[in-house]
Image (cartoon, rainbow over all chains, first blue to last red):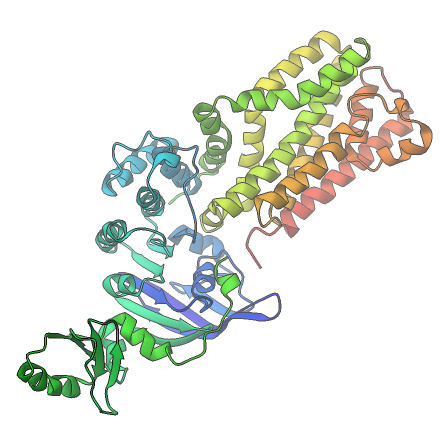
Length: 306
Length: 247
């Protein structure tokens, strides 16, 4: 799947710039995670690409099809679960999925069969006849994912699909998405950096409507100055060195960020002093902080939440 | 994937009326109450003399209510459930979606319509041509209200705003204008105000076929011209100016 944007911009109410001249040229396989602070332009970008929202200027393409001029063709290829989308409470899960499939053009019978199959695949069998309002938060989210996945659209947009879910429910959804990426490209926005890291074959960082960087986790890690983290199980650990960054996390733990040589250079000292520690590669949260941590927070929170 | 318009229309009908009626049968009573309540009041207050006018008026109100209900339903599905966003990004066009939703409002009010049609057959005296004219009148006012409902729904940002619109439209289009009673009942200086509402023209057309109002050939033609013009303008606005894809 190819995504291309040419100087894509979006301004709300003539003053809030959500996207600023964003240019991308991507070949995607699997899951593409888009991360950024509130107001970074994540939702705006996927709303434009999914033909919901008109850009102010610039162009967007999915598989070389212009999302404005060829919207009708693009819509055959895509499906989206918008931010805060919920199943209609008066419908059963099977009615929810099959109705959506009928809107996509399937016959009633096909839609029902495919709906049952999707619900089974997402572990919602046995719930298909219950009213959706009785489902748990996790089941409702799974149902929304089942709805678009069942459509067999090759490109699926999921805007913050796990927001508000507990850790175990999120993990369950991650497993399902990992399974589903084999047959389709999934473009996902999230505020959970752990989620973006675990799921994302490629990760894009947006900030104030601009592209910060894009690539796999190893690529992003290679671009930051402090790609390793030493987690010392002591709140009092101190070190004087300009090339590392010491961050006391709690009374029990101190994180030290640095290059591989700097971090491994500290290990003999820790062993000698019988201190407990672990050495890890920087996580996406660490990398994200290094990319954006020192910049002022900005953007268009209001519109991003739209 | 072949695009089946029939399936797309059926999806709207299933979601917005049939599944709702199956899963919550109590809403069937809800649709019956509004037109019948006014019908009963007018009939009792006039000691039965206005029953035929009120019976036709209840049909008009039912058609207009379809539009205000559509406005509320679409607004709810768009703003609270984000369903419309999913539909915009699907192969369903705005026209097909709205046609499906409009039919769903009719399906939703089938019990009311059936009751009102029986009432009209029993109490309203008209010719076959008159019945046909009343049918065309109802179809036009239905198109008007559906277009208005869709147009407004695309501009609402939440359900409270949507209630605000329907709260204004319902009395202005059905309760206050001479829908349930002849326009001659309104004293002259105020009668002109009634002509601000398109339902007044629809009522005049219907009442002219039941013998309760005689507008003359010119008055009859003017009523049609105004009603059709307003309907055409609103349908155009709904098709061209409503915000299906956000700007």
